Image (cartoon, rainbow, N blue to C red; front, side, top):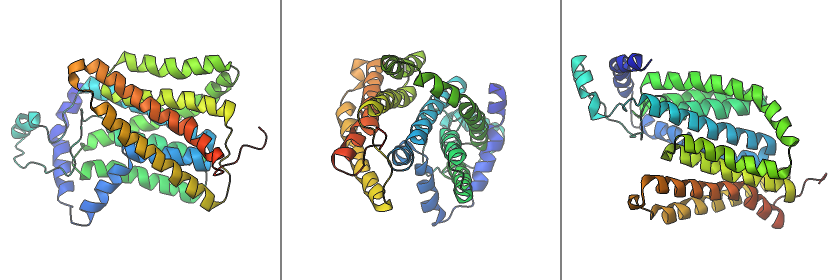
Length: 318
């Protein structure tokens, strides 16, 4: 498989050169925005709004589906370790294939190229939402978003077409398995004591991170710890309701996002002062802590604020 991916590089590069030939001033604005829609910050916004304003259960499910598919994507990237299209390591391969022209990426990706995390994440998140929200217009919109995010990764020069295709395939397989297994897992968890649920919320992501203690796994598993603890505590103490008028939900979402973004950038600044002199493992540990704090804030603290500020009611049966 690894050799096949290396052999596909000249073909993929030629496809990217063809896509680059489609660029114009308008698309050069549109597709970077589309690709950012599938970024970390984009999903913080989307997943938060679903949980706070639309459906709590779906919001929780899609958040964990996204976080664990991010880890799977990181493992695959690190295993194959295929260079990005703009990596100078590819020069000899391209020269041997008689490809003299070079790409001019609009965005430079970080980490290995195969497979596209943006594409895989889009398939999982929007596929999961389309499965639960069955309106035809929404399903069409979700499909369009998935395709556009995948294509945007090639347009900005961050991924080969084989990376995007791989992201679609792995994303679909993962999504199907998640949808099939989730009801049984939720049913089992509902029968456990609160102490067991708290322990699992911390230990499972921590063990997953320790398997490959990399920056790319510290971020999603830190968020998973914070959200898992936050969701559990919210279910015991807050019981906020997502119901309300459209304007009330919009105000709730805007208020929550302001808090999350302030925390995101403030904690990024604080934890960013921890340099590599303490060792990569410790830097990644503090990165895990940063995202655990953000996740806990989104899962419990902000819903608690919603209730205290009357932006949300408590569920009537609680």
